[in-house]
Length: 159
Image 1: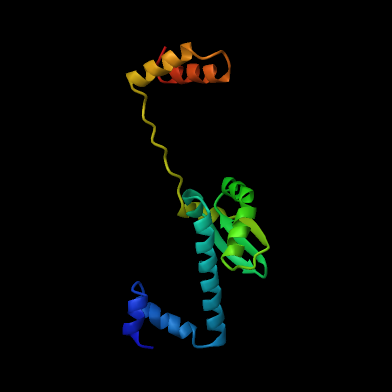
Image 2 (image 1 turned 180 degrees about the horizontal axis):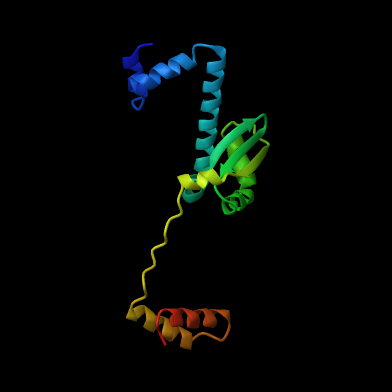
């Protein structure tokens, strides 16, 4: 294998990784591993392109078994979101040339360590914003919206 031409196409590969790839491809079992890894990565890219960024970052294609694709997620909340998107994901995979009929979702808590939750930055409301909500409160009919505005004002020190 000519390393210089390979580096041009795969600039992130080191000489050691190229050696490992050529070694894996040297027999049928290694070639099967490479094919499986390639398929998993390609499916991962197709899934990631179809999901919102926050969800795509934490989902991993874990297995492809015939017409079934298994996606691993770090928590039940992610699994629930994916279940609502299964039809769209299956359609996206079909359009990308995959013969996937079913998507299974598995919660794997070990993925949570790889994707820590982001801390939401809360900015307090300034006096102008509090005044605007106070004016809005006076012009809204009684009901859930008025109650929510009242609670917001109480939390932020407004009237």
